[in-house]
Figure (cartoon, rainbow, N blue to C red):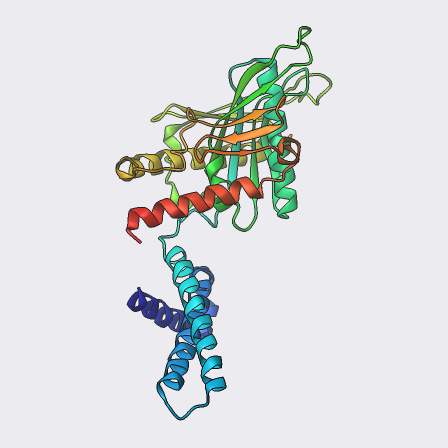
Length: 357
């Protein structure tokens, strides 16, 4: 590991030198790529420097203990320094193992989240609205920006489906484990006998990708326009501003009607389509790797039941990591960090085990 860390430190110095080159600064694409690499390398180098400082202090303490001329009190201080330095080295070594794990190339990307009501009709649609609110409130606590791309509302205030973007540093790295089936158990307001009903909602978290990452042939697209509308007293367009894009080779269909401008709706629909195609491409590439992993936080498959929200018991259970929290109200108000941190930690431990670290 130390050899690898030395290579990382050397690369850090090289990137630092390049960033001071006026020719690099004027090349926006190259400069951005180097800044992204620097951001990844910095915590590794800082932790490595902390490890080396502790290592040097330990060596100096051992030298003092090896010399007979020093007084007893001085040697006691050296023993304490040696013990403390070894503890720091051990802690840094564990943290460096995690920092050296291969980085998910999508972690720095913004995301598009698609939420769809599943089994349960109106009750599922209402819970889809609750999940949209939960993610929106979490994004607000992280100072991330959200933007609705498409929403199909119901008369009762739920959503048959809603798609929205979350833009901010680390959005995908925090939210990527949310893909899958979310199950809710509660007594619907329309239930006169107080029976608990079970409904499901599907969540898909897609990394937002650029044009250059997914090449789409315009000839593969069928683009239809129609009038947008919504439930209740929502705005209904008198012009055909809503967009439906069908990707003919895959059969993927994306609709967007949230904007009154046809051009804006088309741009948003294309972002969703690119992200879905990218996800499909990644899923195919990762299938072989995933099949070799004994442990997984989750495949991200939309058919996988990942979490249950039980209202009568006030609990949330994540089935992938056997974690149950009796903080349902706080979680639905966007307090997701405890859940997300546990998922990220579990995933890192799984990767360390796979790497034999």
